[in-house]
Amino acid sequence: MEKFKRLKNEGNDFVKMGEYGEAANKYSECMKLNTEECTVYTNRALCYLKLYKYEEAKQDCDHVLQIEDTNIKAFYRRALAYKGLQVRKKNLAGI
Image 1 (cartoon, rainbow, N blue to C red):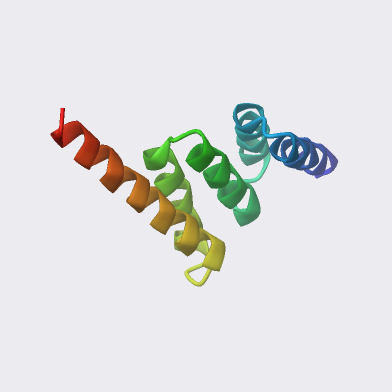
Image 2: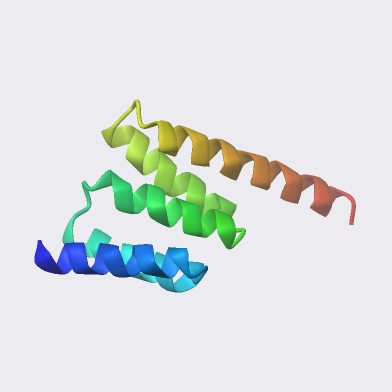
């Protein structure tokens, strides 16, 4: 549990510095230790949104909502992911 907290805090620090790729890696390491901790999924979803990885962000939010069906952050970030996917689809249609 101590390693989990350390990795999560390191991920949080990377987010504060705008290093979203590094932060996502730290949250992924956290998930190997605990798959039921929703905050690391919503945090990683935020990173994926910042990196324009909308499908990955949506998947993380879907996972959280299977565990906590009232998680507001997961709903909000999933909506942002859907919005990003729609924009991408429109841009590809215009090419």
